[in-house]
Image (tube, rainbow, N blue to C red; front, side, top):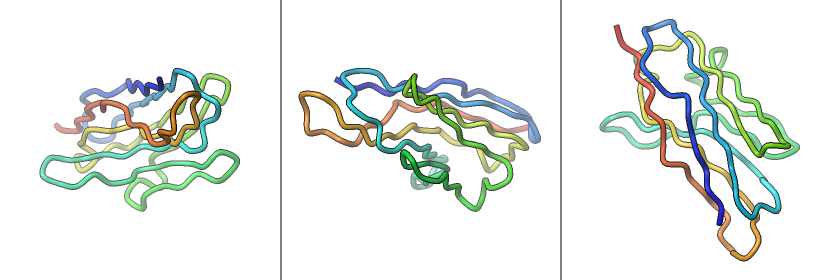
Length: 120
């Protein structure tokens, strides 16, 4: 069984910073892709940043220059450094991963989400 766990959310003032983390655990054969999505109140879930193993990192236009994604391959972990946060960044942030695991054909996994609130 595979599980994704997020952490690092919180409340900050505009211009502040947060670092989100996501760790995958379980019977993992390979992590093929990882990324972050977010969902603000009353809005649909949107892609924030992500990467494909061995490929480049992609960012939503709204976060380019402010957010940085990186990973620890050995730990099956991913981090999102969020700087210069704006009120419109307020959302629940979800970790998503495409994982090949032992004993299952399931491939797409989601974390439970971590709240990020940016306000004065």
